Amino acid sequence: MKQPRICIIGLEDYGLLTGEKTTRYVGGESVQHVLLARAWRALGVDVSLLVFDHGQGRVRDVDGVRAIATHGRDEGVPVLRFFHPRMTRLVSAMREADADIYYQSLAGVHTGVVAWFCRRYGKRFVFRISSDAYCIPGRQLIRFKRDQRIYEYGLRRADLIVAQTEHQRRLLKTHYGLDSEIANMVVEPPSGAPVEKDIDVLWVSNFRAVKRPELAIELARGLPDLKFVLVGGGEEDYAQRMRKAAEDLRNVEFTGPVAYSAIGGYFDRARVFVNTSSVEGFPNTFLQAWIRGVPVVTFFDPDDLIARRKLGAKVSNLEQMTRAVATLAADEALRRSVGARAAQFASEQYSMSAVARSYLDLFNRRFGSLDTRAELANVC
Image (cartoon, rainbow, N blue to C red):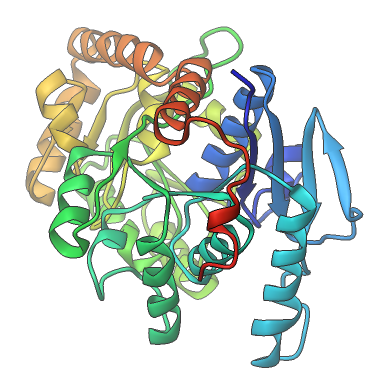
């Protein structure tokens, strides 16, 4: 079968793709986009990635992946820039990519624009759900009502919706009446020899209210003999408040944003990883921990994987989290047993090549021949 040409819409992904140093926080979706792009390219797929214009040129080849510039992050006149240069140059870049499949995963205006483009030009649109919130009307973490409506327009016109979990599939069906397929996420294997475990508890995320880093600080306050490291960037004012709170505790190190290339080193050094978010999809950080044999303690458990497969601990409140973290940190035999199980699970289910192939198989089953179909053109 002829391999499809795939275009990923990932405006924030350029620095991660090229490996250029940046202090900007790298979100989980950027990680997934770049790892998938590399994995598909290794399988012989023609892959394009639409990114912000940082002055790198219209099209740049990065290890076989075409990075196509759209517009500058803050380019244009407020209000008017919604249409130009943002929408006009996004559409122009999609035309430049000339792909069979357009893959997009961050809920918002781009979901609707990509859906419209694919209907207009007879292409296939694949939308991947990246958070449970995007399956529930009014809960999508999208600021403007206008943008929520554009997102839902696109969601309903996707040729294929990919979910991370069975829970997301049920939510999407319940709230929108839409069907979806599950595809696993990808994780990059660790590199280098094992290192000393000198971080008792690691927290890695974006500093936003929904991620609840203040609970990690409270956890550290209740476990003064354990060393905590908090890693992440995000909303500057919020992050500064968390930094100030962390400074009052001798057992907490607050790193701020860290380049993706260095994040793995923190997981290598960690004994336990904690997640304090109120809403998630399937965190990349779970995979980054598991692939290195690090147990996860969390309030959120996608499809009850952690509880069913004993990959750490799912807890309901801070008191339970405190007990679970203390137990895992103190009991090396237990921690090693849980970690070995987690590492095996992650390597078997989430390897880059296996997931990339499963996507191609799914595209083949759903779309068959990917020749442009004239009957799809001019349909909005």
